Image 1 (cartoon, rainbow, N blue to C red):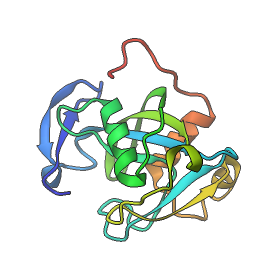
Image 2 (cartoon, rainbow, N blue to C red):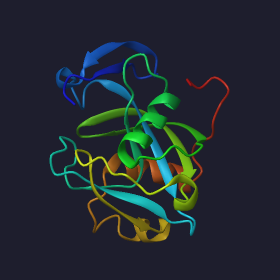
Image 3 (spheres, rainbow, N blue to C red):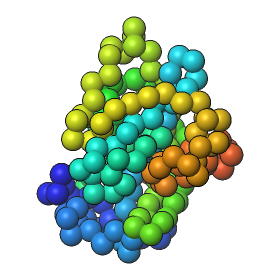
Image 4 (cartoon, rainbow, N blue to C red):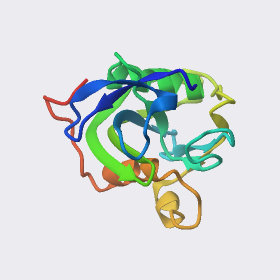
Length: 176
């Protein structure tokens, strides 16, 4: 949504202000985002095909659920909100820590979470059509094998690589 107010941070992830999403200078300004790896019972990841109307990477495949942290919102609240909005579920989250990722159109301080989805326990997925066109499940190995041939969003691929390579760990002084 274009009128969303998001948290601006500096290169050290210190909050320095807020900005309307439609005024954000993506690729220049730093912001916060959450990434949730949603594991199925057979240890595959739920991968989302993004809506064609998305401004960032339309019709790409998102390996993680998540999104931009809104002004005044913690990473944890953002992760919980995004998971419920995009997939309609509220399972417990495990925090894996902070990481920095950047690309041509983004500079993000991300916080990575994971959860386990069980349809019998959490109910069926309810997709947010403005964000998610469809979902499928893929093994981590299949994702990594197809990373150059399938259009995965680069920031979620980076989040997965941090997870797989165990490059991040939660720290006591990490922002909540």
